[in-house]
Length: 242
Ligand code: ATP
Image (cartoon, rainbow, N blue to C red; front, side, top):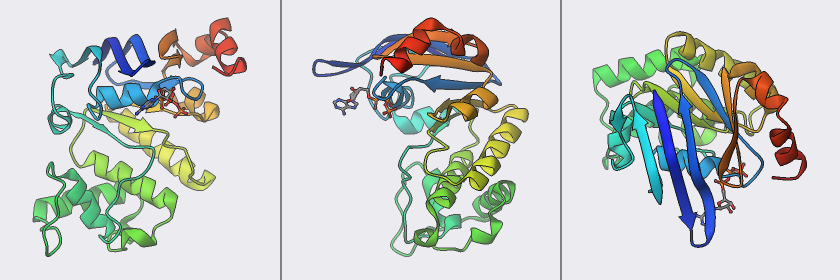
């Protein structure tokens, strides 16, 4: 479904992503892992066009997307979260879902105008995430984990075919994590393709069908969780500090 071909991103002399090639199969949960500084987030940013790649190609369902603008990539069916949540703190959860789903991302002076269809969709997503009770809560009152759940909800507003989750487990409590994992699995069961960057290895190994391992900007291994766990190159990358 997603093909990353010879992707590179250089910052001056730093080759943050260096000739990376990997695929994400339709309907799979694929994890992108690697030591700190391996280039995972930069690769994510290039795929979603938050950053412009220095080279290489990204294909989504046979369509080349690396020359598109971020909102066009979203329209093609690829949506992502960020490590740091990007909410508008003075809006309610419901409003945030709707505003973040609008391509302009601009709220009017009198708050976001919410159509009935947007309202219905946002409420359906909040119900699916088990946070309907938070719909009218001001975002600034939410815990960090609740904000991450809300971000996850905003992601679903655009009816994506593939979602990119950047460290979904980071900073959230174990109970919320169980809920989040449960929801990711449920969405995947409905056919949604998932690519995650994650440091929590228990989560990666239990959730993923396939794992892509990066180190020093390059893909050093790719395969089932069992196979990459046993790969000497992977062990060396982690034990050697990247
Ligand atoms: P982590 O797991 O710690 O989040 P990562 O695998 O996501 O790390 P990146 O954040 O993609 O790694 O960083 C890869 C390399 O690129 C690092 O050496 C980082 O310092 C460098 N880098 C990332 N962004 C920039 C930037 N905007 N300017 C210069 N160097 C950058």
